[in-house]
Structure formats: structure tokens, C-alpha cells
Image 1 (cartoon, one colour):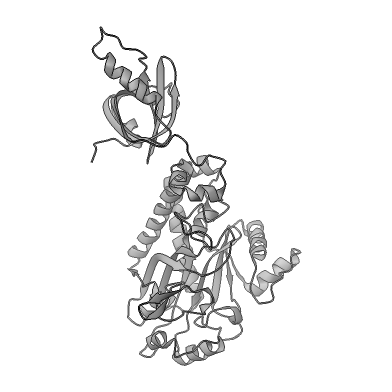
Image 2: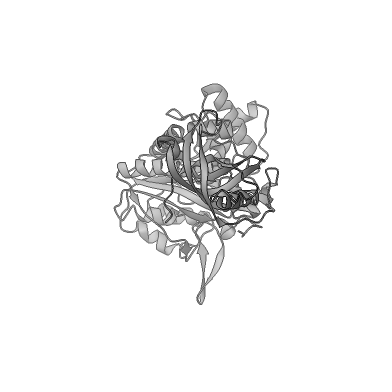
Length: 446
């Protein structure tokens, strides 16, 4: 590997020899001096070269300097180069107060001069050339934030004795209905791509794991073209034993969000303010909690009638209740609780006092649902009846129902869409921006 110094580490070095590598961001080719802005994964630095435009026979170094000048003049945007030279601190340099005087320049990989995307390219066009789009500091920062956020969640989990699991994504039967499942050929039979790790993380409860988490892919055969849907996404999941109700799951969930947001603000808050124009706030606990029926009334009182025929909240209703919570509580998060059993999966526990509602919630953040959580039904006879009431065949769910035939503690958990959290955190308009490589009904490339 080439010995090089990351741009972010240059400021800590004394003036002197240094080697940097990265890609060409811009070139200013003036008559007497040339400037190159070099960018790497950590930042950008100005390179400077006193231009030599013709050979001086009396100067033995003239040929090498002329070759360097001509190479810089021919540099195309995006070319990867390695430069060795002299680091010099100079407060007059706007970019970091330092520059590197070029001694030698190696073109490692030359880029085509015509770049296929520009700053004003459409989102779809940028997605076509995602690897170039991600060179932009704003886009790259998203995935550094993602790394910090997930590391904070994982730290919380590990420090609180959770076990990390990796569940299979090929399933023999549907976890809920087949309406949103991808069916794939599997040797002489067929399989389904998992739309969540739900069954398998529940399996860890009778196994005696107690508390588990997973960050992994999930698949939904949903032909939606909205800004918040994808056919493949990263799901953040947790499941815990010995819950008294969904309140225990909500408490876990909000503590995780505080841990994640605190880490992101501490490490990236200044960059987020600079590149996204957002002063990131760490949410306070407890998050507001509003039963769904009450939330619907609040929304109606604000002048919006939810047009759905079922008992669910719609996206505009979510925006309206978030606006109310922001006005009344100054909070960006709200748990909508006690969802109707008619719209919840068969494994959500129904309320002991009112079977028409479940011990479940949706977490709404800045007007958009990012997660669903619940206490699970752990009684085998109730599970079987609930499955039948949803039109599911208990025989097809045999492997899942077996989990409950040999004892299982009361438990609950949640699944959360990672890209949605990042989208809302950074004020982006689509999860395409916060997904490394987006997959939707019409996109399988790159």
C-alpha cells in the first residue's frame, strides 16, 4: 500500500515532506502557477505547482518540472493521483490554512474528461452514476453519519448484554401475507425473501437469549414509488424477553435513539450544520406517547379528515400529529400507541382490556413513521386463533408456532428502517439519498 497521509491529518504535521493521494476536484491552470484541489476520503487540500511552460537547457530540473506542468494542465476532473511534495502552513490559504507544493505527481487512474453528472442532475441520473455522486462531501457524510449512528446503537446493545444475531433471508413460508413477498426459485421448490427477521428474532426468546439485535437487509415486494419506500432496505431490529407491555419496548427504543443521536451530534454536528444547514438536536426522554384513537381526533380537530377506509393513520395524518407534538411538546418524536388489531399482524398481542386494540406502536419522527414495535403474543393457542383470523394457515406457520410449544417468556421488540431515520435526520427528500445503492420497482442497477 502506498504510504500516504490523509488530508485530515495534515494540520497536525510540521512543515516538510509529505505524500497525499486522492482524486482531482478542481484545477486552476494559470500562466505562472497551477493549483489543484485534491480530495480524499477525509477532506480536501490545495496543491500548488510553479508552472514551467518551456524547457530551460541550463536547468537540469527543467524537464521534470515541465512534465509536471503539462501533466497538471491535462488533468481531468476525478482522476486519481498521488503527489509527493512539501507541506507548508499558510493562513492565507482559505482551504485549511495549508498547502502542498508539488514535487512529483503520479497519475494513478485517469478519468474520462466528460463527467456524466453535474450538480444540477436529476436524482435518477445521479443514482445511475452513484459512485460519482458519492464523491461529493455532502453525500459521503451521510454514510459516515450512518456508521457513527449504528456504532452507537451497537455499543448500547453490547453494553446492555444483547446478543447479535444474523437471521436467514430465505424463508420457506410467509411471515405475514404473501402480498409483499418476493418469491424465488429454490432448487425444485420455492422460497421467499424475508420481509423482516421477525420470526427468527422471536425464536431467540424460547432459546433463552433474552435480548437480541440485528442490522440486516429486508425485502418488500411493494410497487410503491414514494420517497420513503424501497424493495430492499436495511432493517434495525431488537427483541427482548420479560416485557410487561409495549411500554418496555418503547423505553428501549427511545434510549437507543438518544444514544445514536448523541453520538452523531458529537462527531458530526458541525459538518451537518455546514453541509445540511441543520442544527441536530438530541431528543429528550420520555418521548410523547399518544394512543392512535386520540391522535386521530387531534388530527381531525386540526381540520384534516383521514381518508382511509381502514383503522390506520395515513402519511398526512402522521405529518399533522407531528406538527401538533412539535407545537405542544417541542419534540420531533412521538409514539402512536394502541393500534387496532384489524391492521396489525397476528403476532401482536391484543390488549387484555380491549381486544380491538394491540399492545403496539409506531414511532413517528419529523412527520414520518420510522418503526413499528409491539409486545408479542406468546400463548400458542391465542397465536393459532389470531393467525386464522388473518386468513393464514397455521400448518404453513408450523415451524414458527413450534417456537411456542415448549415455553416462551413474554417478549416484544421493534423493526426500524435505517434509511428513513437518516433521511429525516438530515432533512433529505428521499431515502434514495440515504441508501448506498437504492433498490425500487424499476431500479436494479448499479
